[in-house]
Length: 261
Length: 346
Image (cartoon, rainbow over the protein chains, first blue to last red):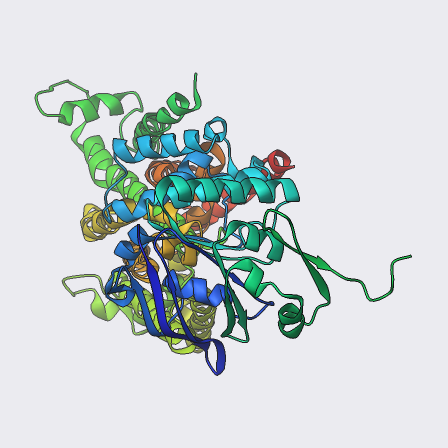
């Protein structure tokens, strides 16, 4: 299992600062979920780990700086599931998942039997073998999400980054996708860093939450510490009531200003 | 038959079609041997084969020195333009891109115009024809300028900036060319006949001139076919999968530009091939670059050999420029492909 640590991480685009001095350590096998209003810096933080934006400060994986890794080596350590992945309509699901093997294929080489076999096993494990030959354009939202997660698994990377993995899904498929990630992380010991908008789901599946606001981490800890009505009202500007179920689940419910009839 | 076995037939099928087109191209044309003697004569040239083809020495010369270089050059030009087009479409993720996108055509046109204006007769004694050379250099310089402009004004990763820079450089080169032509209207006809493309004057030395470039460029492009599939999911995702997107794009653009400039320098500007052939192949065999690129080479060669035939017959004894023929054949055909594709998507 692999740890992921940030020390004084800052990301800026020109003059605007997206993330400022973020310091945290995601323990091996832990699931840290970033929450916060739109524009708080969640995606920028994920993108910095994926090597897609320049940053100041340090990101280390198992104590070794990510800066020193080549693009290819980084892809062996970190799999990124973007918010809205590009899915070419006429690419088959199998071809798409096979792209996840890219870090292991040499520049002019092609995938080996082992790569193809591994992809077949992953599709089987995620129960999507039946769409291996289907074109991505013909898949539903929930099916697509599982195929994208399958591609990330094909990278065999110990760290999984999920950017709004459920934003395009209905409640049933949201649960299905998160259950899948949860199961996989228990089976494989993945370290997970995600960004999510649904606070109840974020608290339910992750081990720890970090609340970002204007690029600063303003609160971090288990769900019942971070998800407080007054904290959320301060940083999201919302009126919510927070309930705690007997099993410890923290439920965030929006409140409407006019009284319910 | 499963989909996989059906797909594995595409390449041999395209190879067969190319062989037929090659033979067809060698058999047709004014003068030369009777058509049915051509296959015999070709077989006779194979090592360890000796057939009395009954072809006279004069006819043999027509076949080997006029028709064959023309067919071979058509195959090289057609495959190179198609492959370069498909590769450009891949790295820019834009199906409307053609091999002339970054200014090769306009640069080559300007180079050719300059040589023609400066007085070609004065160069007749030169050991090599300066026209292809000037076109080649003009094409490369234009793309280099496009790249410098694009890199200066855009972040390196934004390919849209590069495409816009290509548009600007093309306009500039075309404007200069138009200005020069206005001042030297007596050469307009000569320049236009170059611009419209020609395979009629093809010789083995033209073939020898472009062959090394075509081989190197095609080799590099074909070797990138898997990476072009990785690029289909976008720069960021390809990068997060460990692909060095900028390096891949630069390598592919350089290779495609080199190959395109080389063939354009001997054939003139033959339009439509680089955009039509890749689309036709995509329509038939799918968009995966692993299948697309090798098939594009075959189909592109076949297409240009076939497209070169009507030009020899249509306005016999004068030639119809190949660029006119490709557009004439290509445009309606392309519309049919687009129509049926739209139907399939609905």
